[in-house]
Image (cartoon, rainbow, N blue to C red; front, side):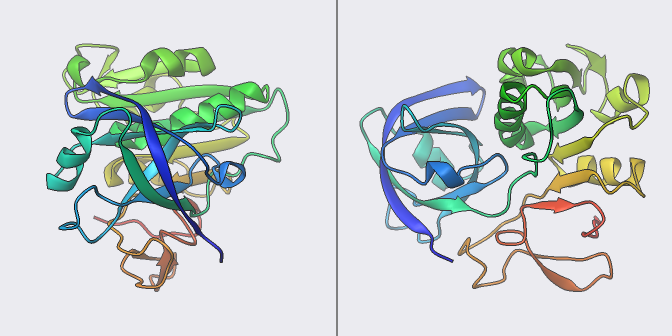
Length: 261
C-alpha cells in the first residue's frame, strides 16, 4: 500500500467549542482518496512527540486544495497543536483506512447517521457528500450540553437533524439513543452509519443486531497508522483479535466486529 507524506499549510484554525478546534490545511494531498471515514496521521510540531496522532477527515475540497480536521484537545500534543497559527505547517500521512461505503447509494435512498462528541466530524463530511448525491439523511447527534455543541448549523443543511444533550439544555434530554427511541426506532433505512464513543456504537449494534446495512466507525489509539505495529487490533465476531482499525477499519460492517466494554 502506497501512502504519501505531505506538508500542508494552516489556512484557518479556530475553536468551535471549549477544547474543540477546526483546523483547515491547504496544499498538495491525496484528495481522491480522502473519502468520508478515512483519516490522517499528523506529526506533532515538536520532536519530543515521536508518535503521530490520528484524526478523521471532517471535510475536503479538491478544487480549493483544502482539508479540514476537527479535534479535541486531550493531552499535551493536541494542546500544542491548538496553539498553531495560520501560516504554520504540519506534516501528515494519508489518507488512511477504509471509509464509509456510499458510492452504491442512489438519489432518494434513505440513511441514518448517529454520532456523538468527536465522532461527529467524519459524519459531517459524510452528510455533506450524501446531500450532494441527493441521498436523504436523518442525523442524530449527542453532546454533553449546549456549550459543547459544534457543527450543528452545517449538519442541519445536509439532513433532518435531531440533537440530544445530557442535561437537556438543547433538544432531547439524554444520550443520542433517546432519539432512536423517540423518533427513528424503526429501520426503514438503506444504510446506517455511526461514529462516537464505544457505548454509542454498542447501542447502535445492539439495536440492529441482524442488519447487514449498519456501519460503525471505531476510535482507537494507534501508533503507525498503516497496520505494521498491530497496536489497534480489535476482535472480530468470533472474538479473534484480527481486525486492524487503521487498515481494515476504521469503518466496519456491524456484523464483522465484536464490541465490548
